[in-house]
Amino acid sequence: MSKRIIGIIFWLLLPFYGWTQATIKTFSQDQLLWFVQNYHPLAKQANLVIQKGESTVRMARGGFDPKLEGQFDQKTFDDKNYYSLLQGGLKIPTWYGIALKTGYDQNSGIRLNPEDDVPNGGLWYGGISVTLGNGLFIDQRRATLRQAQIFSESTYAEQRKLMNDLYFDAIKSYWKWVAAWNQFSVYDESLTLALDRFEAVKGSFSLGDKPAIDTLEAFILVQKRQLNRTDYALEYQNATLELSNFLWFENNTPLLITDSLIPVNLDQLSLQKTMPYDTLEQLMIGLDGNHPDMVLYDFKLATMNIDRRLKKEALKPTVNVQYNVLNEPIGNSVITGLTPNNSKLGVSTGFPIFLRKQRGALQLANIKIQETQLGRQQKLLELQNKLRVYYNEQLTLNNQVILYTDAVANSNRLLAGERQKFSAGESSVFMVNTRENYVINARLKLVELTTKYQISSSGVQWAAGTLFTIN
Image 1 (cartoon, rainbow, N blue to C red):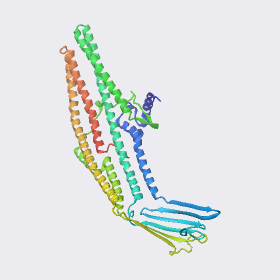
Image 2 (tube, rainbow, N blue to C red; image 1 turned 30 degrees about the vertical axis):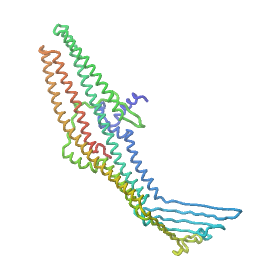
Image 3 (cartoon, rainbow, N blue to C red; image 1 turned 135 degrees about the vertical axis):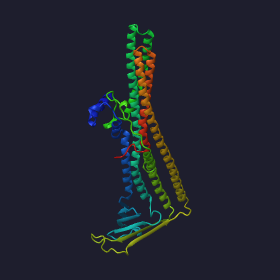
């Protein structure tokens, strides 16, 4: 499917998303962000991060799944059954380092190991395995599950971070597109004015009212503005292609902005109100606990603290106790004749003398936590300063937009007066062109400042981590 067809599809689809015919040709920032959130590949990747966290927890929970076990060994030689060992059972791990186990052994043979000797009807057993030393409060299985749960919770902050950055990149491209179109419109209008003046001067020259040099000067101005218009047309085309990178549709179909869509006209745009200082202070306070970067640091530290607990647990001796009740099944009953006198008890223990490996691992875990804490402090300072930068930029640009709006109005007044003088024969083409250039440059500067102001307004939200919120 060609890009032109895709662009046409994009144009045809717009009315189905609640945009009226009155605004159909104006492509707004909100409409752009709607497409970004619903169809952009990075937005889909951000959603996959959530699913990844859920899958990680599910995998870690598998460490506590009941497990069926079975084993069969047999040896025959010279038509003799040396031994036949059949063992099967069920093991159920629990959260607190306790494992429940039940099973059945059926062994026979002329060379059977006395330890494997069981009654003719087999032997049922049920018991418990308890860790009393290393692993009593936390072990690798519990640590893995808790870390997986923390990772799953952190994926929402990761999604916010990805979408916060994606939104801001899209917004910057959008206002670059807006600036390019408005600046192109300024030179397109100025070229029309230059052509009209050239025709008027040429007519006055034919009547003998203007010298030939005025027609040459008017024509040179037309050529200059044609060249400038071409430059801004190229910038607008490139900005359109850059913005199209953020536009996708169903089935990962890329969209292309066509000439049927135009940006907002800055002359008709009302500026957002500058954020009050009190709001800035609230955002600064909220950075520590609400910005996705800081939330991710907190989750990372929580994961590292679990790892430190596990390393600290390794300093304890290992003490494992197993106790099984044994019983020979009678008929179809497993518990008939059950007595605590028929049992099997086992205790195992171990302890490294120097603990060099364990103490080194714990020290390394502490160092990593300190490094992460220092990195978190540095990141918080960077975020605070970045927020201040965008806030100060917003204030400055707001004042500059007000000044240049007034400058454009004053330049237009001078141009109108110069045109009146020119009509009365009291001015020259050069002076009219000069006044007109002042207006053009002021309008171009106003477009630049206005779009920068819009970006800085979004930049404040981006730096605060609130540009994208999960519904």
